[in-house]
Amino acid sequence: MTLEEAAPAKVNLFLHVTGRRADGYHLLDSLAVFGPAADLLTATPAEGLSLALEGPFGAALQAEPDNLVLRAARALAAAAGVAPRAALTLRKHLPVASGIGGGSADAAAALRLLNRMWGAGLDDAALRALAAPLGADVPVCVASSPARMQGVGELVSPGPRLPPCGLLLVNPGVPLATPAVFRARAPGFSAEARLPAAWPDAAAMAADLAHLTNDLEAPARALCPEVGEVLAALTALPGALLARMSGSGATCFALFATPAEAHAAEGLLPAQWWRSGGGLYGRAEASLHAPGAVGV
Ligand SMILES: C[C@](O)(CO)[C@H](O)COP(=O)(O)OP(=O)(O)OC[C@H]1O[C@@H](n2ccc(N)nc2=O)[C@H](O)[C@@H]1O
Ligand SMILES: Nc1ncnc2c1ncn2[C@@H]1O[C@H](COP(=O)(O)OP(=O)(O)OP(=O)(O)O)[C@@H](O)[C@H]1O
Image (cartoon, rainbow, N blue to C red; front, top):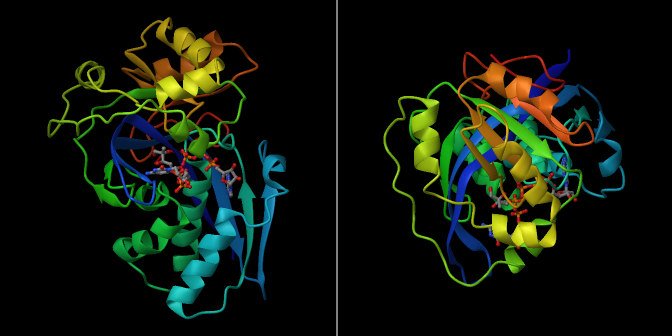
């Protein structure tokens, strides 16, 4: 018996840094969506706990002493009172340290997968509580559906109802460490965003998002000039409604009216950049074409 779970990319449609806790962690306000690319985690029964890494970005993680997937597995086993037994394989399609929460998505996929495999019976809220100590992005990745993130990432609530739209992700191949980007930020904070209950279409969503920001974009551009090049290329694409960086970068995204437009735009960008265009994870119109892409 092999079980599998997709670990879709997390994309921050906006990211306001609203404050700072005494421990140095930043308070955030963000709208996270998922897709169109994903890692894939599979599990088969085994005597112990093991992880094999495959896929285009698997080699980049070979030297990691403690992959987030294994940390998530051990945390779940401890909470469920079971021995951690599974042979896991992670097919890594998402670039590492790239602002789309790849490691966080993998950790959340491990919690979902092993919760099923071990019959642990934890609900989403219990999984989110286990997720928070693993990383600020892990709680929102537990459901991997569009959501507002607040606090340092542990407060997850429903966001506006989203219209059909397309999303294109582009990474220039330069890893960016999240702590360095937070450190390079200019002083000061943004206000919490005011969001509607729903957006009627992608153009209305893009128009509202254009009034918001990713507060980590300027420091990331200063550390990694390629971010500016990617944003300029995305802005110039036909049909692009909004171009912005996700998370702490360097991956940037463009919003389109349809998944097909987002997918077609991949071919208009330099082939040495990692690109993935399609629909949002969990939406009926999400597309299944790209390697690692997921849909329903
Ligand atoms: C920037 C985002 O990608 C937005 O979704 C996330 O907040 C980052 O999530 P993540 O990579 O899971 O972050 P973690 O692994 O928990 O933290 C990495 C580092 O980022 C900084 N960090 C992260 C999250 C947060 N709310 N405030 C921070 O200051 C801290 O220096 C921390 O040591
Ligand atoms: N399964 C994993 N996939 C990716 N990175 C992992 C994994 N396990 C541990 N890591 C470590 O986590 C670091 C951050 O990786 P990740 O790809 O999640 O960053 P990110 O996309 O910038 O995340 P975020 O958007 O949450 O800031 C990597 O540099 C690596 O050292």
